[in-house]
Length: 116
Image 1: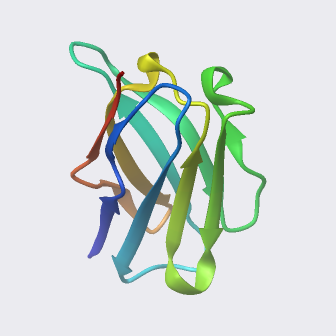
Image 2: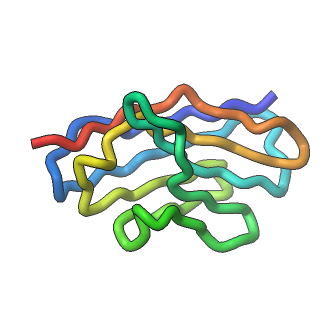
Image 3: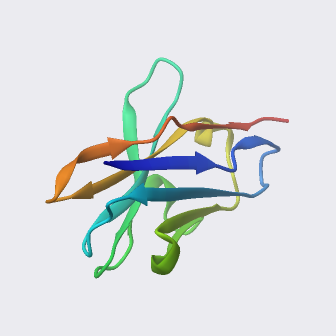
């Protein structure tokens, strides 16, 4: 069984930065994709960014140039560096791990609030 746990959310002013972390544990295969999604109040859960063990990072248009996803393969961890945050970035950020070896697995989410 695979689990993912997010951390790093919080309250930040517009223009500020936050760094989210997501750690996967359990039976982790050699190939997987880990990514970030966010859900604002009353909205759908939308893709933010992801990265695979062999591919290049992918970003939603809304965050390109402001967010950076990276990974530490040895620790099965991905990070989301969020800079130049805007109020519209507010939401709960969820981590997901995907692999042909198992069903998509989501974390519990970490809240991010961008407000002055």
